[in-house]
Amino acid sequence: MEPDVIPNSLSNLVDDCDLGANLKKLRITDNVRELQTVLRDKSTSRSDFIFYADRLIRLVVEEGLNQLPYRKCVVTTPTGQPYDGLRYEKGNCGVSIVRSGEAMEQGLRDCCRSIRIGKILIQSDEDTHEAKIVYSKLPADIASRKVLLMYPIMSTGNTVSKAVNILQAHDVDQENVILLNLFCTPQAAKNVIAQFPGLTIFTSEVHSVAPNHFGMKYFGTE
Image (cartoon, rainbow, N blue to C red; front, top):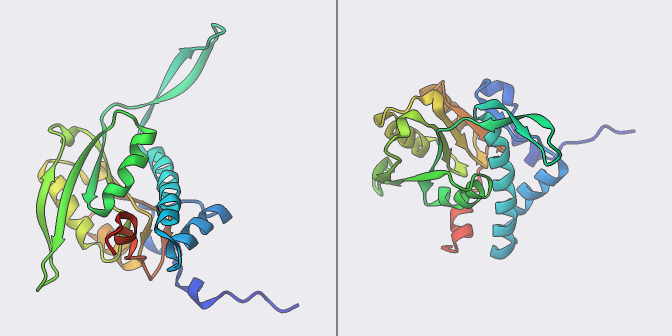
C-alpha cells in the first residue's frame, strides 16, 4: 500500500511547538476543520460564511474562557445536596479590535452575559502601512482585569501589538491579556510573542496564509 500523501496546501500548517507554550490552539476535529474549510472557500455565500464563522468563534471563545482563573465553590442542589464546583474569578472583560474583532463580541456575550467589552480602533497609514491608533474606549478599571482581546485574523501582528501597547498604557499587565483569534500566520504569532512574552494567544489555526477577506465577507463590505 502506498503511503498517504499530504496535499501541498496542508504543508503550510505549522507545528505549535515552534512557537512556544504561550500559543494555544483549539483541538482540531473533523468538525473544526470543516468550519475552517468553509470560511476559506471563495464560493461560500455570505449567509453561510456568517453562520460558520459564528460557530468557530463560539468554540474559540468557549476554550479561551478556560484560560481565565476560577475559584472553588460549594452550591446546594435542588435536592439539598452540596456540590463542589467552580466559578469565574471576578474581574474579566473583553476588548475588540474594530472592525473585524466586533464579529467576536456576540460569541463572548453568549458565554458571559454581563461581561464588559471595550473597543480599540487601529488603522493602517495609506502611505507607510504603519498601524496607527484612532480610537479607544476601555473600562476605567481595566488595569485590574483579565482582558480577552478579540481579533479574528492576524497576518503580521502589527495591529495586535498596537492594541497591546494601548492596554499597557492603561496599566494592563501583558500576563493578563489573552488574545482570542481564529486564524494567524506563524510570523504574526512570533512577532507578537517576541514583543509580549507574557501574553497568551488562543487560535484555531496557524497557517502561512491567513483568510484576510474575513472582515469584508462577514460585514458585507466586499
